[in-house]
Amino acid sequence: MKKILMLFVLLSFVDMISQEVLDNNAVLSMVEMEFDDTLIIDKIENSENTFDTSISVLGELKKKGVSQSVLSAMIKSSKKEAPVINEEVKKASPPKPNDLEFYWENGKGELVKVTFGLNIGRDFTIDETELAIFTDMIMLRAKMELKVPSSFNPSSLIVRKRLKTDKYLTSNDKTTHVVQLGRSGTNLYGGVVDGVTLMGVNPNLIAIEKSKEELYEESTASKFTFKKIFMGDESFKMKGEIMISKKYLFITYDNQELPRISIKDKKILGENHWKSITDDTVIEYKGNETKYKNEDGVLIVSSGGYEQIYLLIKSDL
Image 1 (cartoon, rainbow, N blue to C red):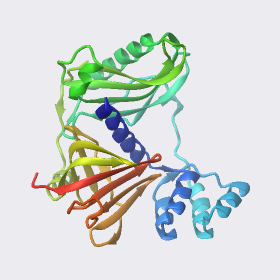
Image 2: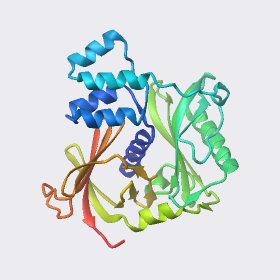
Image 3: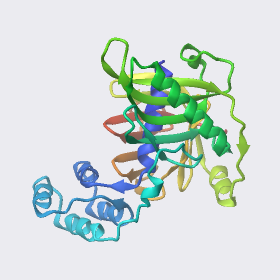
Image 4: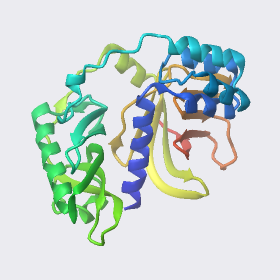
């Protein structure tokens, strides 16, 4: 169960990293982490945003330490023409394999946004029709599990490889993959709780043809393994691999290949030391860190109030 929860946190990181939309809180976070104004302004100029630049809000930001130059960059950036959203797209429909989110009806028939991740390996995808069938099946199953079906509210959908521990939460432990739905609703005791519904599946995997750039990035990446992760004051035994290329970060946990994470905007802070910021997510590599008594450094991922520290071991993967 602990592995499933940890995987859910990892995938949440990826989801937040994938959505390049800055808001006022993201700017405040960067200021509180003492990033240079030039770095914050670069991030503002190269990201979409939903800034509130009303006079009263700007005054509050100034009181909290946001500089004039950063406030000016926010104002200029917020004047950019906002992308036109086709309202016809905003309807209940299953996700496509490359989608990061989709809309679905909750138990009251209201449209809600659901985040999506296809985590079956970076080399494969699945058929759109098959994904739609999986989505319909698990949504119906999760809704019917609740004491009050009208309280059903889906929040995240993931298709991933099966873990050994999944057999405790699925009726079919012989399938190769699992559809995992994060949702909330009223349980048998009348309380509204967050929960997870799992369903075993055997998707037809379709190989993806990689570009020359992708093949080059993977072949030239620095390769590491890890056996332990720190979260707060707790440590967890967890095996996986990490590859760090010039532009991307690749994380594999318990044979679950997470989507690649862009680190193109990373800032070099010293020898074997860099930091990359995406919205309120910070990824930092410290190759010379010895605090944890390992010789090959650490990778730190901070997002949504959580911090994960990977103890790296150089590898010839």
